[in-house]
Image 1 (spheres, one colour):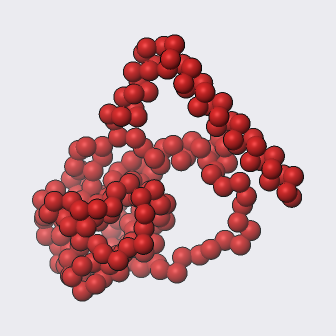
Image 2 (cartoon, one colour):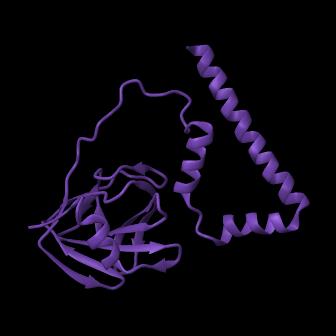
Image 3 (cartoon, helix red, strand yellow):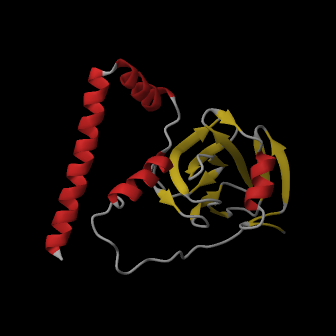
Length: 191
């Protein structure tokens, strides 16, 4: 068991080191490759979920050992609201005071902080590179780069409003397509 653990850890470290060295060598010797690497790292919206998928597929995940005793979600709720109205590039949902907010789709937390007109905001990048903005959220224990499953607890609202918006890269998306089609069947209910 320990022998397998050490071998797996060594293989993953060596594979990742070789990959990093290859990228560095190509970017030093090839100007076009260097410009592409710089563009994707510094100018384009880097997709953490795409990197995670590739890493999991070829290197077997970030953990050197598998959890023999899986954990299960304690919080699994639908997003319930009383009223909905347009709000800027998204929507404003009227919910009960200090409402416990579930995550609408699995993804990685890419931002936690204040956003104009949204208050304290959590942005989650989903597997299809859509960013979901949850505004007016307090009491969250999440940190940037945490992975959250669909339906897991994000935090609670500060009062009785929750703001939702969707973006891809630097462009805000029409919330109607995502709110009504993507989530309405799975995690949304209107009281």
